[in-house]
Length: 406
Image 1 (cartoon, one colour):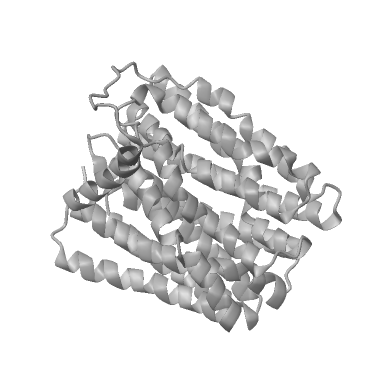
Image 2 (cartoon, rainbow, N blue to C red; image 1 turned 120 degrees about the horizontal axis):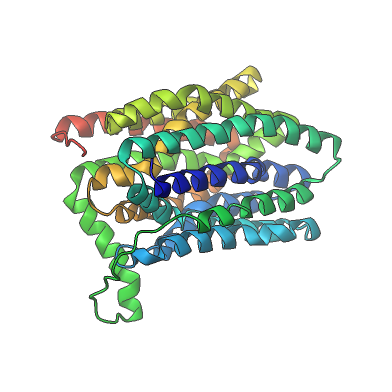
């Protein structure tokens, strides 16, 4: 592999490994807020809404990358840096609303750099090496999360290092990967921007028009987005209920939650990633998506059954890890797959946009339903919606002529 490819691989590897300690803590944050700061259902619903709702605004961060490819690296570095900075102050500000603010900044910017990252990978690496290294980094990060799950669970249980201190330290470790990102070469390309200077309304509307035009032009990509939409709605509807269900009904400790969310999920990711990558390499996107949606449906169903026996809770997170491995690869690499030889960031932006659309009301609706019916029925409803996504993909595929991705 050439120097460009090697530097790109090293940067991606260090980004994955250095970010994982922060991700492990961030994943259990709703449970920490409920258990240690007594966060309300309103606060938990807002927290669950941040990622999808703010994705709409993340969409604009990379809106001009197609015409300004020289900004790929600075776009990625800026988003990575700003997303993690507020967490450096968590050790000194022990307040649920400040932490929700930190999460809002993180969710606004964390996905913002993704189109730039995927386009850099597409530019600097061929298809097979790109998929191999992306899958390898994903698996290694979850192997790391298994180890970190044991360590962080122990630290939280004996309270040697408070979770607030751990957040500051892990955010700082994640920021260290900026030095690797700076080293990634970006091919010199001419600045292409033939448009006349746009007014603010045009700047706001143009990315939406481009997204709609792309979905009309690519019926296979539209079908893919609809299937992902149903799965995302099911998971988002259940998300405000998860912390209440685990803390108030199951009465789980920090260690039990961390073991499920990091260790067992990591095992699920590790054992399944090879098979997901094989399916992705054969361009079986519809089959992969159906399997992912079925996995998420089973995850929520097993979680619902955890009231009967805690063994279902642990099995649920193994299933979640299996489904999440496929979802992560498919969601992040679908842009280059559907784009073929064309520029891929527009596809990645549509992925981000659809998260925002389904998240504008779904978590809030989940919170309202939870307040009336309790967390368990909402989790079961989320499982049913994920399963409906499987049915949609089967029916839509039968009605649509298959499209071979290049």
